[in-house]
Length: 309
Ligand SMILES: O=C(O)CCC(=O)C(=O)O
Ligand SMILES: [Fe+2]
Image (cartoon, rainbow, N blue to C red; front, top):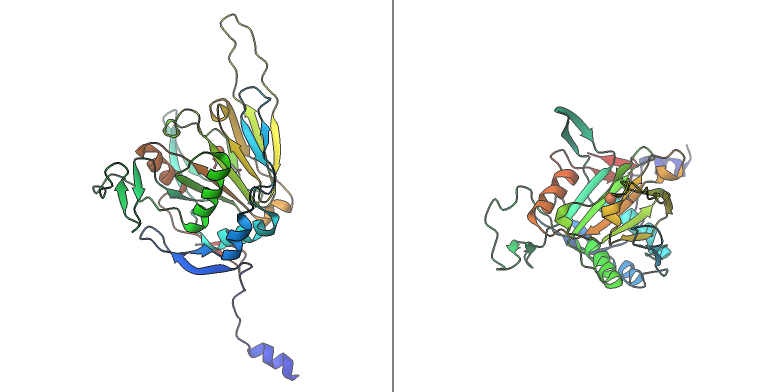
């Protein structure tokens, strides 16, 4: 046997080198299953030039009020950000049961999810302790059934940039990971009362390109029985680094979805990040219930090329 072959035979298998650089600093918190590294200086510098493209206002359709940045995140960092977040965040695959007409059905959320943040009535102090937003006093035990988690630096950095661009403020960050074309989100609107009347939601895509579909909610005939024609469905092929800001009446009047897709593109995996602002405690309970749940934690395995529990 040749020397080189023997050498490589006995060489220990080193773990795959991550495709991105991180900072030495990490966020740790009792609510995190493991620490999350900060973004590298280089990533932060590159992100500082966001938005990479001017936002296009989409408001010519009935009740629609959106701004579309294609892209928002500079293309030099969008893939690194995708690899970083997929590798460093913890995810869950949430199951819950709902009652439809008295019959309870099990729902398996068809994507990986994670969530950070707390509603406007509370905040994390600099020691990572939850305090009342008004009195800044430590929360009494049992204020929340769930365990709120502070937004880590890597997502907080993007949140601050998004706030500067949009003039909105956010206190929640929800993350979806669509592993392949079978993962999806069905038609819905983010019109919960805990978000307030005309919620602004900034929604990012990293990784695979996926179609984002929008359709107007059914319009009832007016009192005179006149039928208002519904606007036609909208399809945005969201690519890595793109951001859509939905605001005004968009959630009240429109539905959106990311349907299942065949083909190789979706197999690359797609991360969606939404920044939102929940006004009351019920919002925090809802977001943790449906994005964390009670099952086990998943983490990306670079070796296996999939989320593992
Ligand atoms: O993945 C997306 O682009 C949309 C996600 C979404 O609508 C949601 O999480 O409410
Ligand atoms: Fe949504």
